[in-house]
Every structure is written in C-alpha cells, then in structure tokens.
Image 1: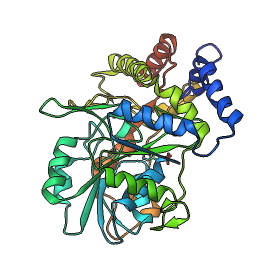
Image 2 (image 1 turned 90 degrees about the vertical axis):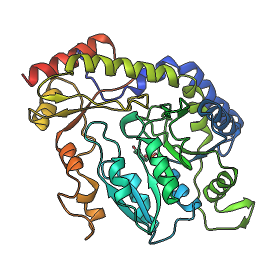
Image 3 (image 1 turned 135 degrees about the horizontal axis):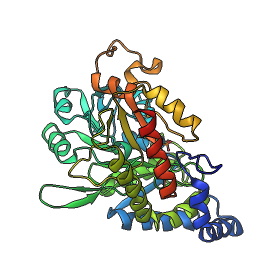
Image 4 (image 1 turned 45 degrees about the vertical axis):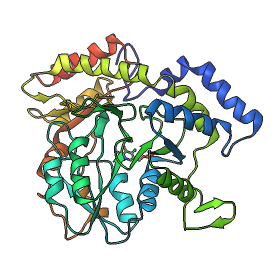
Length: 378
Ligand SMILES: Cc1ncc(COP(=O)(O)O)c(C=O)c1O
C-alpha cells in the first residue's frame, strides 16, 4: 500500500487516462457510424499491425484461443496428429489441441527462461508429429532458430503462441531481426485487456507471411466462406469488434513506450533481487528482447505462498502463473501423463511468483514492493 492505494498486478485505468482523448474519440467514431462489425477501424488496425510487425498478413479474430484453433484448422491438422507444446503454459495452448481431436505432446521447459526445452522437442517427434507450438512465455521468445531447424528437418509446422510477447524482437545468428510471431508458419496473439497490447474486451489475431495460408485463416474465421453464403469448409465465427480495433489502433502507437516502461520495472526488480540467496530472477534469452508481460521470480528459499499472503496484507498484489501443471489438470488426465513426468514444470508451479508489472508503476511503488519482498523473506 502506497498511501491508501493498493498496488495491483495491472493498472488499466491509469493507462487509459493518459490516452483517454484518443481512445474516446475512436470509440465514439464507431458508435457514430454504427460500423460495429468489420468497420473501417478493423482494416486500419490490421494494416498498422502488419507494418509494425513487418509481416505480410494480420488476420484479426475474436481472441487468442480462437487464433490458435483457427491456425491448427487452417494448417489441416487432423484427429490423431501429434502437436508438441510446452508443459508450462496457459491452458488455452493445449486446450485447442485437445478440442480438435489432436494429441498434445507436452515437453518440459528450461528452468531459467521458462520456455520450451528445445533439446526435448526433437526427442518427442514421432511419425505422427505435425506441428510444434512454442509459447513465448512471459514476454520473450523461445529458441526459434533451433526450433525452425528442427521443424525443417522433420517437415513440421510451427505455430507461435505469441499471446504474451507481442513486440518482442528475435535475432537470428546471421543478425536478422524479426518480431515474435512472424517466424513460424503462423503467429497467434491475444488482445485480452491485461496483455501488453490489450483492448477493452476480447480480441486476437493471427499473423503469417504465406498468402495461401492467410486466405485460409481468413476464410475459416469467417464461417468457412470466401464469397458470402458460399461455404467451402466448416469454419467458425471469430471477428475482432470494431470498437476493440479502434482501441487497439490507439494503443499500438504506444506499444514500444509500454515495453520500455515494463523493462524499467523489470530492471528495478532485477537490481533489488539479483543474487539473493532465496530468489531467482527471470533469465533472458540472449536472442530475444523481453517485453515483460510478467516479471516472474522463483522463490526458492522461502515459502512462496506465505510470501504472497504477507504481500497481500501490505497491499501488494502478486500472482502465481501457473499453480497446476497441465499434465496434472483433470481436463488433461490421460494415461500418457503422470506426476513426475515434467519435473521442471512441477517445480516451477510450486515456486513461481509474478510481481506487479504494468506501465504505470512509479518509483515509490517499486521501492515499496522491493523493500517489502526483501523484508518478508529476510
Ligand atoms: C500463452 C497464452 N496463450 C493463449 C492465450 C489465450 O488468449 P485469449 O484469452 O485471448 O483467448 C493466452 C491468454 O490468456 C495466453 O496467455
């Protein structure tokens, strides 16, 4: 608590107040023109995002989960096909794999970067494997160069789950720098309000450089039709609302500032906690910038849950992303997984703690957070 103010994980209101005039005008314009579905702001945002990402096609849709599902449908993945993904991720990644009757093949993660352990990916490839879904968890890219080499060697698709890492840059060993989500066959992102580029409701998008695939993604997101009332395949209804696109258009122009503000917070936390015997700070992948969707500590020498409760008593929010590994969730119970199969993920679920991370944190709040954490784990 700074004064009487609690410190939340995100501060969407504070962020909104700084861009209120632009956002309000954008929303009002949609209402004035009643262009609620596929209005001009959707195309404008799509085109702005294509330029920002340096990608040929952005296909907006209703949310990040739909983006992943539509990507798998458009790539023609069929029941029984195996899809490799990280065992330490948000449920949506694995959920859509199951939902489409595909087989999720989970792979453990690197204990320091939290991203998929590339060495284990290749070991899990079988004749049924069709795709790899790396998740750029907490805001930095997985080892895409190595994953791309594996995918090429085994003729697999890559679907990047970039819900948490929009705007991160990945640098290949030849010096080529590209945006997260534009490396694989398709990138799938979420504009959930608390995401780095969040709208004021639900939203999502897919990115690709492949013209044919872009047309399929667009068709599937639009009831499987290219021409109105002519349905070539069974699709879904997944649109980005025009009001959300109007908000995103404004926020996209601030995205790099937002990433810089988040990095400033991360540096403050790093400086306070680096080398502490009871804490492990999040490691950086040397090939990726980090946009810090989350700043996630590992609490190794103290009780993480007690620390969380004590922080809450001091008015400081914190979150556990994620408390239960996917393979130990009832929804994914299968004779293919058992406790102990993914030791890194299981350990992380027992010790990770994400601290407040947003664009509006001032030095007073940051000092209060870091002093409180250090005091409570003394
Ligand atoms: C890693 C990851 N994948 C997918 C999603 C799904 O996005 P949405 O909530 O927009 O469906 C999220 C967001 O919550 C996420 O964090």
